[in-house]
Amino acid sequence: MAFRSAVERMDGSLNSRSFLAFLLPLFAVAACIYVFAGLAFFYRSDVQALDYDEWEYWQLSAGLIEGRFDDPGRRTLGFPALLAALRMVSDDFLFVQIAVSVIAATAPPLLSVALRRNGASRSAALLAGTALTLWPPQIFIAASLYSETLALPLLLSALAVMPRTGGSSHAARWLAAGLLLGALAHVRTMYQLLMPIVLLMVWLECGQLRSAARNWLLVMAGFALAVLPWSIHVSHKLGTPVLLTANGGETMAGGLNPVLLSTSEGVAKLERRSTWTGPGKWLPVSGNGYLSAEEQDLPYTEQDRLLQRRTFEWIASAPAAAAYLTLRKLAYQWTGYPWRNSELRQILFASLPIIALVVTFLIAVWRHPRMAREQARFALMPLFVIGVALISWGSWRFRQPADAAMIAIVACALVSSLRRDAISSSSRIASTYA
Image 1 (cartoon, helix red, strand yellow):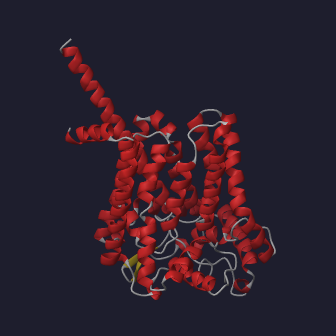
Image 2 (spheres, rainbow, N blue to C red):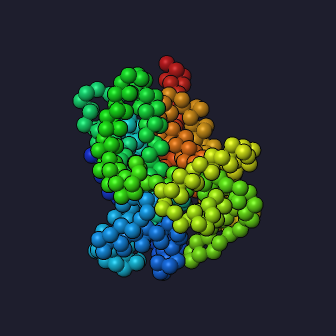
Image 3 (cartoon, helix red, strand yellow):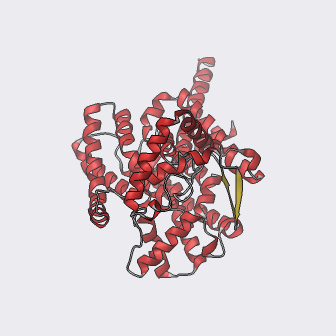
C-alpha cells in the first residue's frame, strides 16, 4: 500500500522537466555504484588477468593506437576503437576500467528515456531505470572490459529514437534508429540477428503490416549506411563477401560439437573471476575437434567455411546430441546452471535474480497482453537472445539486453496494476458514499 501511494505521488508530481531532471542523478548514482563495485570486487590489477575476450579487445586497441588492426576477420572496430580512444587519454589500466564503467552507467537513464518515448508512464520509466541500476549482472558487466558495456547503451539509444508509430514525418527517426543499430552491430555483431525481430516489433506496435514494412525498410536503410562501408573494406581485405565478420562458422562450431558432450564440468579461477566450463559453454577452434592441425593453419575465412559445414554435418548425423547441447546452452543462459559448481554469491546475485525476473516477466506479459504488445520492442528481446544462444552458446552476457527489457516490462506492468487497483478502490469508495 505504501509503495503504491509512493508511485502514485511520483507519477502525479513528475512533469517532463522534472522527469529529465531525474536522469542525471540516476546516471550519477549508477556510475558511483559501478565504479565502487569495480574497485571493491571486480577490477583487475593487470591486463594479463583479463578474460580472453577482454584481453583480445585490449590487444586490438593497442594495434589501433599504432595505426593497424590485426584481426583476421573475427572482430569489428567498434569496441577496440573505444578502448583505443580511452587509452589515448590515459593508458593507465585502472583509468580505462573506470571510464568504461561510467559509459555503462548511461544504460539505466537511457532505459528510462526509451520507455518514456514509447509511451510508458514517467514512474514506470524511472522505476525501470532504477531497477537496472541495481541489477546485479549489470553491475558485474559494468565493471568489465566486455563490449556489452557499450552495446547496451547503444541499443537503448536506438530504441529511444525509434518512433512509436509510422508516418512520413517520422522517416528521419526510423533512419536514425537504423544507423544506431548499425553502429551497435559494429560493437557486437550478434545484433545483426536483431534486424528480423525489429520487423516483428514494429508490426506488433503499430498493428499494420504495410506501415511496419515501410518503417522497417527505413531502419534497414540506416543499418546499411552504417555497415556497408566496413563490409566493403573487410570483404576486399579477406577476398570474400563479408557483412561484418567472417566468424559465423567458428561461433556455431564452438557451441555445437561432439567434444563438448564429453567435456568434464569444472570451474576455472581467474583474478576476481571464476568461469564454469562444460556442456552448454563454448570451445575454441583448437579444441572443438572439427579441424586438423594442418587445417588450423588455413586462412581464417577457409577455416570458418569448414567449421560451418562440419557443424551442420554433425547436427544432421546426431540430432539428439545437438538438441541436448542446445537445451544445456539455454539452461545456462537462463538459470546459471549447474548450481553445484557455483559459488554462493553467484547463486544469490546471478542465478536466483534471473529466475525471479523471468517468472515475473512471464506473469506480466500474461496479465497485461496489450501493454506487452505496445512495448513489443522490449517484450520480444528475450526471443532475440535465445536466438543468439542457439547459434553460439548460453552466455549470460549475451542475455544482457533481455534483462534490461524484462525489467522494463515488469516495471510497466507493476505501475499499471497499481493504477488499476487505485482506480478500483476509488470507485468502490465512491459507490459506498453515493
